[in-house]
Image (cartoon, rainbow, N blue to C red):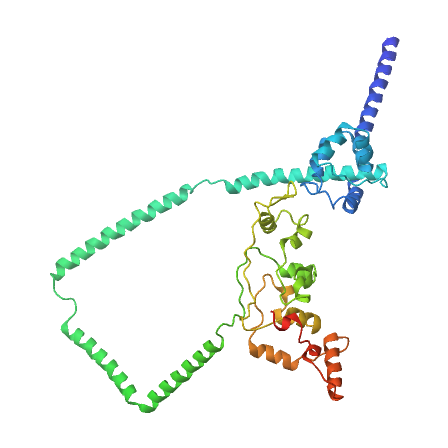
Length: 423
């Protein structure tokens, strides 16, 4: 018995030792802190990676979750170039898959930092998968069509039966009344005469009103004033499109970009500062941000389609590219010359002075009437700041020459600038 108890004690110690090693192995893999890993991930990884979708690099959620060798992951994150140089099979496979593009090295990260990042990616990827599983039955329930309920069907049948009964009853009543009357007239002749007299009295009242010349003159005069006022307003507003807001092919929220994000107008409309036209920005300006920002948006995918851009491969196909048919909002007549740079750069006028509070507009519309009267009133009340302005300083110098009696040529007044004739 004593030998059996000794064997049992040794066996229990062995089992306990194996259990401790197992727990230690599991805790070693999950020892990272996801909260700390999130901060490190956002500071170093978000410019190239997302957890659930591909950017410049692959989606990290499925990659890191499927890789069980945390030591190899740490070596790849810290210095992937060393693994590639050492002909590591996994490293070479990734390098060739992404067109031999080099990933940044993070030699400054410690083992604990990398473990925290791996723990955060795995935890967040698991959360995303759980949310997708929860959303899938709800989506299926919404899409499921069970058809009309039995109560609705029975109620519809009941309404039809009641309607048929009412129709039969009314037909019987009409038939009975026709038999009783025997085809005679329902109304006596005296009643018809009374109605004609009432109609005659109405016409008599109208005749008395028409005989009142003062009242007739007042009605005609008021009608003439109303028609003239309506005609004047209609003619005055001809070809004035204040408030015009067409439906654009892409819903561009100016209140988000110019308001919340505080992006300067000239970042997109760069021509306003240096040319006659403010210009519509090319889609490449949009891709400066939206190659990585809001890639799931349907409106952003319209930009991708117009450029022939595939967000998965991040490549452009020029054969699929097509221009976006923007609808112009602010449109001056051909005989009206307006130069944006002269007003924005020389005059120092802000965009909102003509285009209104664009930073609050969900979709841009024509804020100002853009009529000649409106422009003239602005030119009358706007003060000119001549200090530090080369154009006005030249004008002052020319006027000083005129006062001294010196000959002045059109060239000194800007007469040989290309825009004087070619616009």
